[in-house]
Image (cartoon, rainbow, N blue to C red):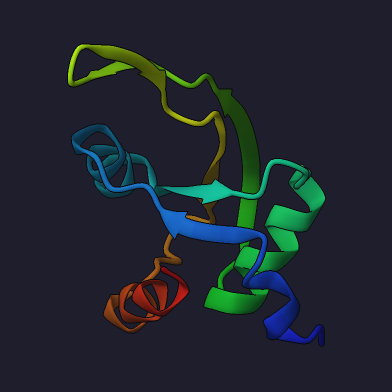
Length: 105
């Protein structure tokens, strides 16, 4: 079994939005912000090791930085990478795993 400490740098934080919450309930999909250099294989191993669940599919999306204004000056948010992980039907990240997610952030 792989050392779980090596995966904490890959998965940065859970993405909690209205859309991601709906996907958790209906389709058993969970969203995470991951390191920009991460690939699907690394995300699959990290989620399976850290949360002890079976992953069916991993989708990666590169999110663009958005333009924002602060005190009348233009700025940008940083670009980031999102992983949408589909878990095996019946497997779910329970309350213990949600508490574990707070340790990542």
